[in-house]
Image 1 (spheres, helix red, strand yellow):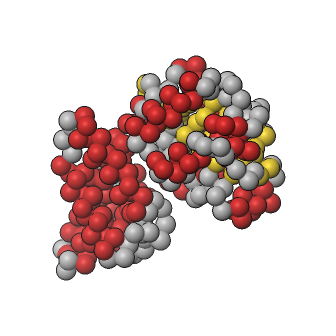
Image 2 (cartoon, helix red, strand yellow):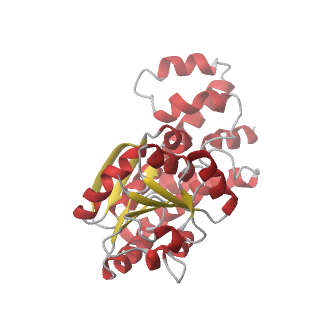
Image 3 (cartoon, rainbow, N blue to C red):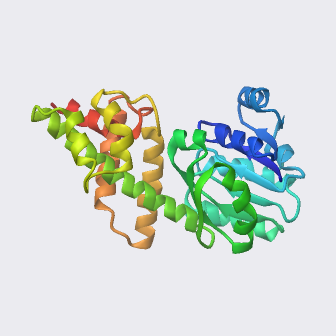
Length: 290
């Protein structure tokens, strides 16, 4: 069992930290809003810290799941940052979806100071975090990954090292690119069924058993048909992720025409007031066009 710090107790981080505690690790949590950390300690035990640095002191592993590039820099760097509190040989594991650029920047800073750094973005949504069955895609030095993987296993269904620093974030971009196209296709199929006067549930019962089947179809079709989107991964966060994908595509020379189009469709959803709706709300945009 390890001494672990967990930074960021949002809809993903809160249950992930809980799984670490349930697995027997010694866990100290930090959250920008202290009330969330207090609630976590009341529910799970463990300790809370007032700063990332305090949480990281004497920890063997420091896990983070925050919002974006700037949030990650904020919890890592500076006098109160985790890097200032980490001991030599400790390993920072970042579960935030951020740019490969900031990942490599922070990895270099950690390595230069005798610490490890693994970028480990996650997929599986809030349900995956709560049930401890996340997919974790990692980048970093092999030795650092090998040390961190048994700890990550507390909330992972699958965890793999893809390559060097930044490879985990690049893989998460592939994940988001694939999801964007699938959700748009599912939205169009269900919208078409509605306009054609078909029973959407009956349609999905049949087509989900064939080549059209997907995780999105299995887990989101009912709420999409019911016009209910108050769950899951928010549109605002998806646009953040797709922005990272499109910026990186410009740097690498990749062509992402469907991703760019769906990103604009999500912008339309935001204009409808759906920034906090689940990403399956793309169908809402189609209905608004009627």
